[in-house]
Structure formats: C-alpha cells, structure tokens
Length: 209
Image 1: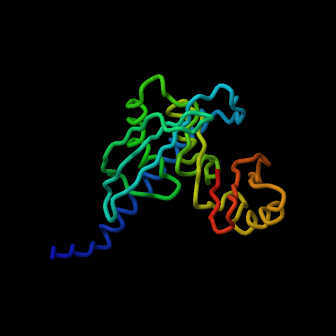
Image 2: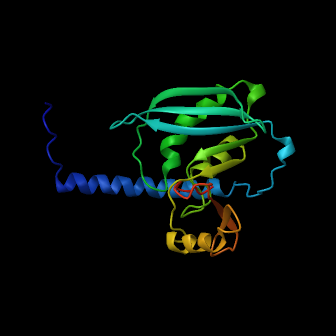
C-alpha cells in the first residue's frame, strides 16, 4: 500500500487557495470577454441543417484520465454518420461554473478529426449554456470558439438570478399537463435562457437545454 501523503501546512493551504482565487479571477475576465462575442440569435433554420453533433467527456473512475468523444448524426434521420474520440488527461482542476476551461481543450481537436463534408451545423454539449451565473457556460463557450450554434444539455440545475429548483419545479407543474417543454426565463432580463424538457416517463429526470 502506498504511503499516505503528509498533510499540507496552513501556509501551503493558504497559498493554494490564493492561487485558485487568482485563477478564477482571470477566468472570469476571459468569460466576460468571450461572452461579448456570443451570438444570442436563437433562430436556426432547420432546412439548412444536415448534420448535428454531440460532445461529451467521460472519466476513468478516480482519475483525471478521460475519453473525449464527438458523434455526428444526419438530420432529420438521426443516423450516426461518423465519430471521433481521443484519450486525454485533464490537468486543470474542476471548479464549478468554470468547466469550459477544463474540458474544451480536450474537445476542440475532435472537430478537426471529422471529415469536412460531415461538419455539423449545430452542436449539443453536455453542460450549461446561458443558464449560468455569468451567462456563459461550457456550451456558450464552445459555441464562441468554434463559431457554431450550440445547445447545452444539463442534468443539474444551477440557481441563477433568482431562478431556483423550487420556482422552476412550480412552473413545470403548472404547465406540464399542456406541454412537454417549459421555458425558463432570466428574472433580470426577462429573456428565455433555458428549456426544461419532460419525457414520456415521469421517472426520467428531465434535462435543461
């Protein structure tokens, strides 16, 4: 059995926290700069879409080793046409609301591995888009750097700008008899920042797109 690492001193812990704060501050500035480039036009002409993509990263348990994958489907047939994967080791720590800085460097090379004729017109991303404390989650971030329309598909709801799980759940309960999707609006700007989807089975936890 390997020897346990000695506990870090209070000065080492303080230095580590200071580095994290500095890193987060720099990332917040970069997020703000990139968000200014975000195209919030939500209108996509479905007749122009031939291929859609889905991207995700899966980790080997207990490690930072992962497999990043991009899958291309034809539209509207939804047939898999090609896919690309690569093994990677993520060196940056996971910090909530800064997921893009950890995962996007592993996702970008996948787009270069796809034949040009199959390049997607829309990309689905495992994570949040504008439903984010600073309005710029991993899906929005990936959209800006790839110049492609993206849709974030999140399993976990983030409490943002007055939106809470309780308030969204109440809204869904109010509308679920009539619709399978519920708009989630930003309380500050009154704009729609997400859509909560409900499947046929009530046992399935609905995603936020």
